[in-house]
Image 1 (cartoon, rainbow, N blue to C red):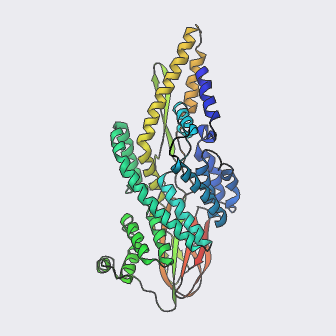
Image 2: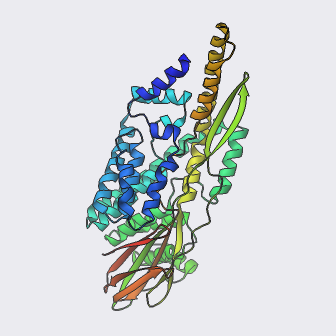
Image 3: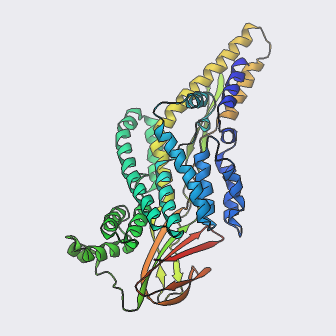
Length: 455
């Protein structure tokens, strides 16, 4: 039993050890918070996550807290929580050498599970953090702060692409039958999404903010990047036609022939743009593989996405002179699946090391019991029980993100309108001549919350 006690003491002694996620899955921890978001009092569950920001998984809880505050309309609080998450990312970036705590966490993960390792966030989460922070600044009236964040989001998309290309050689080197089969299955689940860091919703949002804040050339570049990822979105096509003509781009004629003439703003009209977010990104599941090594039972647990929920329906926007139908710009659930696929090879390497280490520990305990001539091998039994209980897949991810993002755009006669989505939730918006009204609708299932700003 000595080895078992040492292992437990190692975990508990780690500074900020993520004890909550070691034996209790992260989705079960965040479930009450999501339920609260989908109620009349969305901010009531924020304490559940904000109290844990100073722990090893603080970066993740800061992202969740920022999103809860944002959905609740408290953009100031959301900004502060997201800044805490940004500091968490920067701390990991700045670690030129591995700290003693990180060494201990990685070592104990070999004997326990990957949840011991401090959460570092997936690339798509970090990009969306800056995208959402830009919206916080915009809806708080700070356009310059919004521009800073959109530039950071763009830089991160480029950095993540470079990082992924460098990592591909390692992925190929570690490939084997099990890895290839699971990666192919996740490919099928993710659909057409091929990388987790190329997010058309982020590119569209950054392009939109560039355009609204007077930087049309940068807007055109980001709209074009978004259209390369989501080529069938007609609103993106119209944006490219309109901006290419406005900027006298050489592609203007090609775009117009391909997609037709873009709608033109009439006299006395303003523009309304909808960002519609629907549902929640799915949770990771776990699957276990029991087997025997040297007569002792071992269990391997891995995170996966075994299935995807039905795609969100296109939002039907009513209350305007003409009905408007939103179109999907990004499936965040597919980005999450792809991120897991990209991480899979390294996760399997850690899993193999953990299975071997646990088998060695069990064998050592069993040998000690035999040396003492025990009739009942209580130490080996306890070791096997501990191995089964402690083998928990790492199911951590930012779970208050939407499942899907949609966009819609139209020129409308100036006036006040009572707009709604799918004949359910409604809100009043004001359209002014020559101005743009941006409407951000967040649909969590039972509730749809609207936030609008005139620019």
